[in-house]
Amino acid sequence: MSDPDIHAGTPGKLAWKFLRTALLAYALACLLAACASTKLIYHPVVRTTEEVAMNGQAEGMVRWTDGSGRQIGMKRLADGGDADGIVLILHGNGGNATACAWYATLIQRHAKFDCYALEYPGYEDRPGEPSRTSLLNAAQEALASIDEKKPIYIVGESLGSGVATFLAGERPGRVAGLMLLSPFQSLGDVAQAHFPWLPARWLIRDNDFTSAEYLRLYRGPVGVLIDGQDEVVPPGCGRALYDGYAGPKRLWENPQGHHLQPDRSHDEFWGSVVEFWQTELKSPKK
Image (cartoon, rainbow, N blue to C red):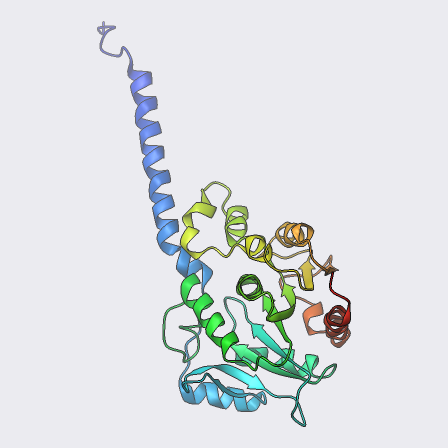
């Protein structure tokens, strides 16, 4: 017969061992997620300067340089010069400035605007590494290099919506209006929705874009486009941002649309966006 004391407490010891292993595995998963957060957020495509120039030429875009001659993006000026306004386009995490050419095409059908598309550090042939700090610094420098005598409107898609709201909060008197495509209250909310079993919003803290906080200092017109079947930014994230904004606003919704589609490419949609901006610009300020 076996001694009963030999197995005494064994279930408890096994349970503790299992719990300890599970906790270590969870901690390791959190550590790996934190280390990988930058790669999960930014998806830059790197090309040579020659490739970028060739692609830009094909899209009718030319290089945009700042005051020191650094190449910071692409631009397409309004036909005939002397534009009535300026649009700054901030692309998403997997985009690039040249690919924003069709925004310029559609917007310039409805208004005589100069269109500028910012390239992020580490994307295409722009030197640097993408991060929250580098993107926000690049955006501030870009805004400072644009003609301050004309109203500036900002289009931000997905990740770029976080950069757009930051600029609006930092320079509320300089930004005449926003159009946010697939936006969010914070990038941490998006991460948490995708990884509910991890403390995701804390793991990306250094790379978070807190759009709702940025907009607290802004009172200009904000347009929001939400895609009902968005698999990247849950629709509730954009809805929460819209509902929480206290200034003039307009919501566009695509119940069957997926991430950034389809209305962002519709001529009629951009006509309504330009009309919204210009109507609010002419409205008496409270």
